[in-house]
Length: 379
Image (cartoon, rainbow, N blue to C red; front, side, top):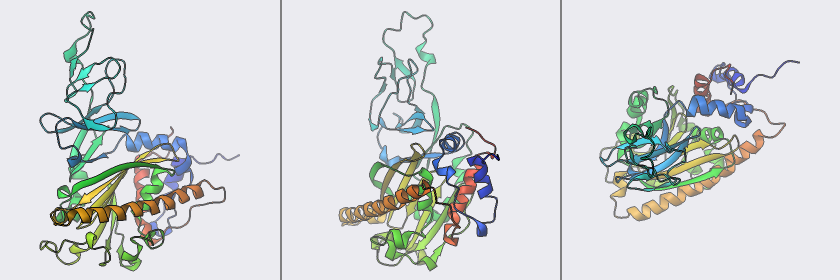
């Protein structure tokens, strides 16, 4: 009996053809726990991941927690005002330390009260003086690479991850005129959906589904024939839409005289590999940060906000309320679509079909995964 190819081998076979002959990714890549283990090792444990927006941690002691490939991580602003990332595991008996988000003057272990400064150095440890091998000055929480790019907090477990600014310089060249770093986050939520993380990523990457899946919200603001899906890069893919006037908040503010022509109405959809998805308009932005939770669930950090021009508008609060309500409705529609896709992937009679020319980003995403996960890799 011929042995079935591994999911990694199926991925490489899927991406070995020209885009004009491309099909959706094989089902095993979405359902296999073994393939998810490869993703955690070669993708999430290797590349830069987004922890959210830098302006969400404005004050010394502000922190958030996250998991990267099973590794508990703290991201915080230290007393000098710099953002840093470190292990969220105590160096004593290995309890996790902080939970969720908040503000703290120091990091105190909830198990034995070992206490760390905001730079990760050990400040104190009760009842350790009798241990001759204990040296407080030699103990600190391991540091993790942390950089800010265009207002995004980016972290990586990989000490040799390529320079972030260099890796994403093509993004800066494309959308630098909008100055993402000047947009301010005004909302942030999290949720968990029953679908594979890649199904949601791919849903974001293509706007082919907008007229149907989003017929009740933004579907009428796009024309598939005016949609452009250029070739992306090894680090990201993108496409853009020329919006009509049905959603004024997606256009440049009337007071803005700097943006001209189509710059005033272009909506960019940027997929920064592996799991930061950004919709950027002259008026607002919103984003998703995706973390797999088993093959069949995805944890999502969902946030967004407004450009400086719209925030300065006297009616800013009403504008924010309007755009948040719209995006919430869009998310509800997306949830229905991506959970139906995963239900179909689990069906016995389903099979991946050919891709539209509007799904080039999906194929490039598969190529990215193949560039990270060796064809003969095993969990």
